[in-house]
Length: 493
Image (cartoon, rainbow, N blue to C red; front, side, top):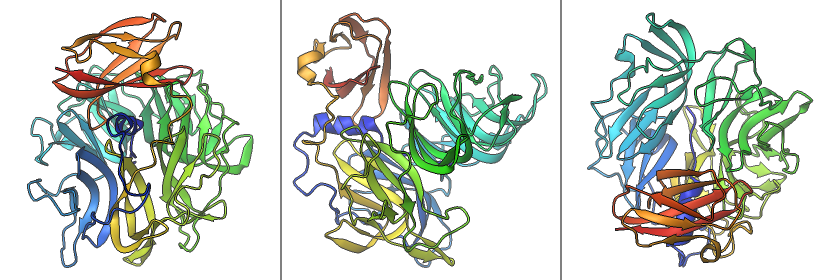
């Protein structure tokens, strides 16, 4: 099951609501946070409220026998004893409303205090479904899910019998018998929904419902193959997709194209058609350095990407050197794919567990209060000035310098986009630049969670919108096809 790193939505919320930032140096180590576990790894992280995070993976202290699969940590890194540690969880953790989802071979749902949500069935108890190979999952706003991988279906009444790879479930975990489940000749490991509702997919298959596909392909919202898309990717696999508002997208993993088999791309950018965006350097060299080679990681690996201020990318993974420069599991690439000076001589250290040497960052989360959490399988973190050998599995850093990192493509908020009335009781007018064209807008809460999504198809200057969000302070993120972005603070009374 993949992991997902921090979101752009959380970043921009921090830009608006935390303009004062932190007094500490950007990207420096916050030694007030440290967890005590000695093994084994963290695979996914989620901030649930300011100062508290939920981590999935396998964690235990010296002398303990049983691994904890999901824990909540306090602001200083101590385990929150009020969170139910029932041995469940693990894999990728997501939040939808006031519920948590975790997924490995199947998906489980929990309340925010860690208790299992009994209205969601144990999926393998269904007579219509049996999990086999885990992949990824997507949570819809109503709590239903789309799950990938390779799993057995036994729905004889509707003709879905055998191995399927894109499978829909209702908001209580039952197989959705109203949907058309999809199959391929391999495993779909990674899926990510684009703003238009389509899904990017990557896995080991070469055909999808009898039609030839590349290692990166795209399907419509109902799972039907999008035959207008061709990535030319014939080798490798993708661990993370990062879609952009204009239809372009980034990939992280290890892939090669049909007309350039000798070129291994770890971080690449693609156009909406699937063609490689040649304006971005896709041939950065990620090297293991002193880490030993393995079958799954012979040369270094970029495992995760997330948006970074200034139209840049934060890249994490299992490497110690990028383009002959020291970066210990973390680096920043600019909008052209060139290596930034950020995190020079910074990152995590190795450790040995059961004879295997670990030393990488699985992912990162940039929070609304401009703190950066990194997580993975490692012991020790250095920010280039301070070295703390006791850091392990989760580390907290002070975030980037937001006063100088705002993208040139981000227009001044008050000059071009307005919300009135503000505060609002739920109905408001969004004023946009004239002739802007189609626009996507998202209303985000303080955790960066999308509580409302708006698709504005016309170029009208004034748009009448409404929200049923609870009272509080929100961020309205407006994105146009041409790449312009605006953020407006919205108060709902």
